[in-house]
Image 1: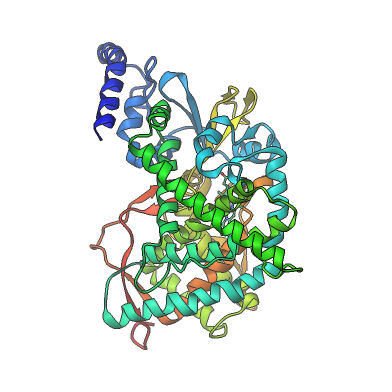
Image 2: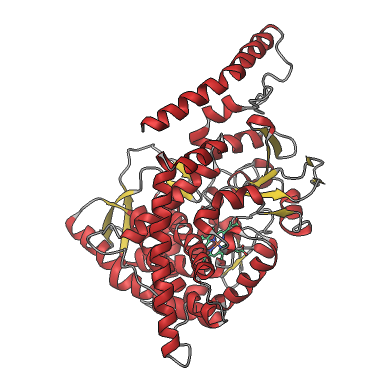
Length: 511
Ligand code: HEM
């Protein structure tokens, strides 16, 4: 704490010359107001760039950058960070297609992001490019074929749903207690993804809501990684890491805990595989080990990335989904109609067919994408289709949150929650058909060669949860009338402070 204070003080001393420059510049600007003074593009000053705007908006980065984008003609702007670093934000679908597909080889994870995330993610799929990425994608893709997905829904998801989630909600309904539904959904997703990744059940979703060590350390590691990624002065965390103090000390401890735990599971699985002649487990870890990879560190990296991918994404999507439908009873009753047309415990094919629910989830993620901003770094100088020049090394971030909200892309009714915008109705049969949106205009799952590998799995899991929960319960938010929950983002989105709800069993009065 003391050393943190000393660091902040030295930083302040370093900033004094910049503050002086800022003072001069502000004075001059006030005397000679620029013609752009009404523009929402943040003001930039020598050396410190737009430091003051960044600082003022540090707790609402996503909303702020979305607002700025709305005010541009090409849905793109450049943010000048301190010390000459630039970051381009874009919600322009042509730019997104250019980055994620046409010029895929230029827009990579990049060294800055890789170094920032290396302690936690190592060489896992989220933190690598080139052949090492290709290899992991190829081996892992088997985990996402139809047979594995069917198995996933019918065993992993259904067990977690029927044996854990539903009983916990039934108890909350009977006792009329307030529960944090976001926390419950995160626990649900964590158990699911650990079973897929390791074939291990952390039993995080139990009635006692335990503080499982591995899950807690993982949460801490994600939160502190995100602080690194969003640091205004990245050199600060590097100094703290060198001195092993403050948040970096905590980060080191959390990462050690996660890696130690994961390594134990890897060793256990290696022993198991040696004893067996054929591969019985279908988890990812077994798959990678059976392709001949015995390097514990590498296999651990791979598995950690997958847990990160599956952990908070579906829970974030579902949290906001349940919030939105609680305020749109007409959508809820359409979904209920669809659920009731399926069997009590819908199997894989039935879940796949839930078109109205699918559209509602897409519509909910348009407003609240689980990964609201995603960045790449240019490996060489380049020009985006809208004419923006990108210097080698510049971070370019596409902005799914803004893309869901700008009028230019979504039309005048963009603020309406309307699943029907994803649907066509056949007048004769009265059946819905899903009309997919181009992935570069709706890059919620990214797009191009690195499109989310778990997209189909995520939809199956979410639809199964929606069917299981809504068939039996009504989820009622405990918030003051007119108060909107706050959308915040670490690496993935969250509802600030959790999602307090009461649960009601459905009966003839609250159908
Ligand atoms: C609603 C749920 C989900 C959303 C919105 C989502 C979104 C995304 C996004 C935006 C990326 C690109 C990240 C980047 O490269 O920076 C991504 C990648 C990925 N996702 Fe998902 N995801 C979801 C669920 C899942 C699930 C359940 C899994 C299963 C394990 C998964 C596995 C992956 C993997 C392996 C990648 C890396 C692909 C690659 O780099 O080639 N995702 N996802």
